[in-house]
Amino acid sequence: MAIIRPFRALRPQPERAQEVASVPYDVVNTDEARALAEGNPFSFLHVSRPEIDLPPDTDIHSDVVYRKAVENFEKLIATAPLEKENEPSLYLYRLIMGDHEQIGVVACASIDEYDDGTIRKHERTRRDKEDDRTRHMLMLKAQTGPVFLTYRARPEIDEQVSAATNAEPLFDLTAPDGVRHTIWRLRETQSLVTSFESVPLLYIADGHHRAASASRARAELKQQSFAHTGDEDYNYFLTVIFPDSQMQILAYNRTVHDLNGLSQQEFLNAIQEQFTISENAGPEPPKRGHWSMYLGGKWYGLQQSPAATLPTGTVAMLDVSILQDRLLDPILGIKDIRTDKRVDFIGGLRGTKELERLVNEGKAAVAFSMFPTTVEELLMVSDANEIMPPKSTWFEPKLRDGLLIHTI
Image 1 (cartoon, helix red, strand yellow):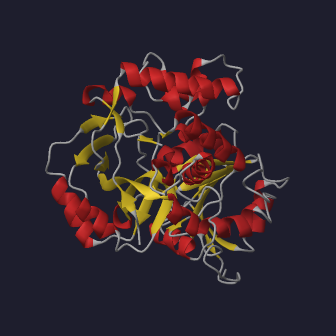
Image 2: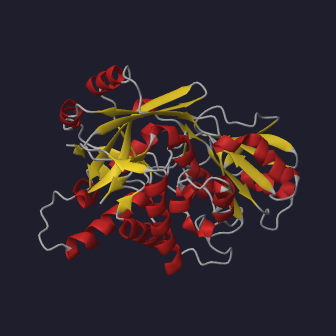
Image 3: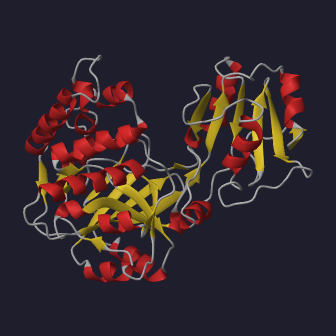
């Protein structure tokens, strides 16, 4: 049973939404965030990445950074201004990127269901990243960016969502990257709430650290409460919930700085023990179980050799796992892609030309173009209570922070 709850969003005025909306805090570093927010005092990056308003050598996890987040948040509320809805609502959030369109329900999801596994996970979180967002939530008393959830699509929900988009939207803006963001406020909420009660499971697609931090923040606020009832806002976390049929996952490609002491020919010879190699391949693999490799100015096609032992297990059969277990680890010596500085990850939106550039300029010795992990693979791994390898999925388009905020 999926519990979703309407909430009183804190949001910008429609005429200010374009200036407030910002990329998620975790897809840019400090320098990139500073450049994006330059000249725009209303950018939500001043709240989500407040170190951009402090000296460049500031420790981003120091007390002064979180105090600056509070100061900037209060200033934005007053000057944008941000206003809080009088009544709890659900919202619809539509993303259009090129020919791709997806529409999700913006609601608060139950932290109890996150903790008990009704909301499934597929990624490990890092304690330092949890510490950062937990403190950010507690200082602001707000969840400022949504967790991206999915579920196995249900026609009755699709029909209600489609009908509701005939109304006048609350926000309709096109971001600098060309993605169109449209949001509707739904005053009638009970029918969607009831329909989601028949959804057995929700799945985190993107935002594992935000969800984990919301759970940790709830535990601390619950401990501080003198009369905890379970109905407080801190028992829920901000989400946008999309049907699996509309989700778009792009490839998450890899580059490696060197060939682990091998010449290019020695490297190709070593690969042949596990993979069939073809020359003059395309830069994008045609289907699952295939990889494209850029080496020495040429694209090679890889697929598992018929003589190789086939992997077993939900995670082991993923393309990212096979590449790691059969090539990156035994041949290139990449034991742990979480910590090895010799491997880099390139989001599929940047394209295979970026892989070619990195190799041609000597910034990498070899690049691997992946076939995208599928949504069904993500659901299967989550249902098995297993963990995907790092950097398995790259979701596009991205949601924007600052448009709908959940205060706790």
